[in-house]
Image: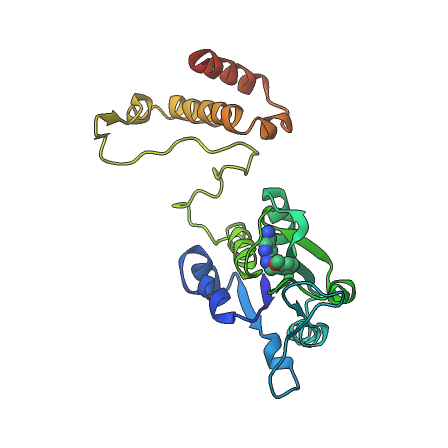
Length: 246
Ligand SMILES: COc1ccccc1CNc1ccc(C(N)=O)cn1
């Protein structure tokens, strides 16, 4: 998978290429990451990428031309046609289904805006999809782009060894994750649930599923609404509810 990022801060975005699972995905050639800086596509002495908003108001708006030239060069840098994505608070809320959608694209060009945002005509001329990582304002789209890169990289075949937990990742099956424990067995009088120490894999699996169902019911009932639970899951959740009824 190839991801190009149009950004005024390539050093920030390139951090994902240097460490962890995303760094390993790049190392293994599973993910190619390239940044394009609109400032390199300016023609004036001051390398101007922003200007004052028509209609007045605070802040600045990113100009179309430097962005458009950067997108054009990004497109031309590989044969594979790209899906151009603008990261903005106005976009569709990203969830794991959205990540699966984006990770299924052979190529993404992510636009990371700064200032008050980008001239709407760039969106009309070049952008295929707008996505938001949540209902909050960031100083730029770079962190949102890095979230997309990380979440997509985890889904690329070979990115995670079996030492990682993408398969059991919460949200993969629409539920929150079960609690996790590691050594020592007791900390400050808090012991690891006995079932996890017994080595009975069937019991452990059952306990983990029940915890995932129960925690989703307690913390994110909205997620549960969206799911068709199996008979077995319904029974597990019922058991959890009885044990944890307030
Ligand atoms: C006012 O900022 C903008 C306005 C418009 C576009 C981009 C920006 C850059 N900032 C962003 C970007 C994304 C998100 C998000 N929630 O995904 C939050 N902030």
